[in-house]
Length: 322
Image 1 (cartoon, rainbow, N blue to C red):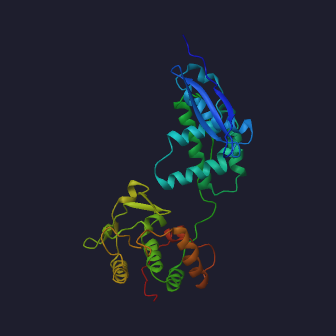
Image 2: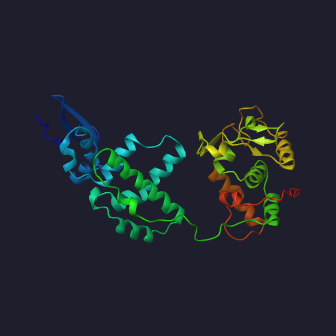
């Protein structure tokens, strides 16, 4: 006999202390089950609670053939993706959660999957005041969501397959001249001067600079290996396999790093090269706001200067800027 699709029972559970909560009940293997969804303060209406419980309803009916005939919303798909498929790499999780919360769910959350049309998604991308690369990242995440929906048999198609969104930059990236780079260095104190020097000359990401450890530098072969990235104090793997390939270290740059090492506290192999006072990694946003940008202004450098600006710098290794 085919099992009946379970809608479950969503009610408010009153408490003697604290706010009342929404409780969802259903039957599993002949036994009653329940879970608390959230407080009435967080979910003030029945509709709010229904949206919050939808991904739970989908899970308890996962093996029911009738699941395919019940409309699944984008928000419910997102909730299941967050609970089962979200990447473990911290930086990726932060980006994905931001895209979901700020863009995808507000625009598409209440629509059923079949209501997401390629033409509407393309029009939405055109209206977003975001860089093409950011839009391309959002498109990739939406495509991934619908691929999960296909695997979970919520839909037979992926409408994002037909959505066009390029990642080409609208503007040529800002590139510092050798004179500007030298002027920037002249207005930076340690460790920020050497950090900028390493970022500019090796083309490293900010997360790779703050995640660099002394054991990553091979002084004999004059190479650097990027084995990790650090974002908000959390260590993760290198972003790509290509990132882990040895990077040649110019002798002049090696001498600058060695000079910096001789004047710093944390010099053990597993210590961070640019460790903070506590020995822990520094935060890249703080470094940019409190040191790099003020130094750029003091040096009279016009235009936006950030970590990504340094990655585009073509070094001439004219480091006699002290």
